[in-house]
Length: 216
Image (cartoon, rainbow, N blue to C red):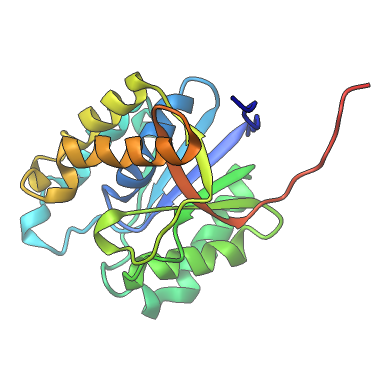
């Protein structure tokens, strides 16, 4: 078996458009790293204009806590769902503030293969706001088209179980197929197969900045 590439960031930032996006795309990775580094999660819309989603923010906090991210490291904002393209400049300024205040070393956002207008806006403006920073794209299965992960991160059985438990906090979405435990596990198994590992979470490379070094 080949040796894994080792990567690390002292401050790792996850940015999603809506509650549940980050957990769907990155839940196993967050479970894997939350005790090892400083993680901040930013969700841009609270979805509270939809009367059917009244408990979604509470469920989001509970989901993140299951992954090991405390409430004070989870920020939920109030950009209007499905209107992100009309608030592009305000979103850019919001993301620039995150970069200035948190100064992340690695940023995770939606994949460019995502068709949702809010998701696409977040990704495009993140690439502008976080210039000079490594940016990786995560997949939200219900809205992507043509996603193929080319950056695979090995995760453990425990990480898989914690992602499944985190998604189970979303009682609002319990009937959605993409919250089914068997879909989550199958996705992580499939990405693990691509990496020749039992499980992996997959991302696409939007920008990687590195320095090559070797020991004497």
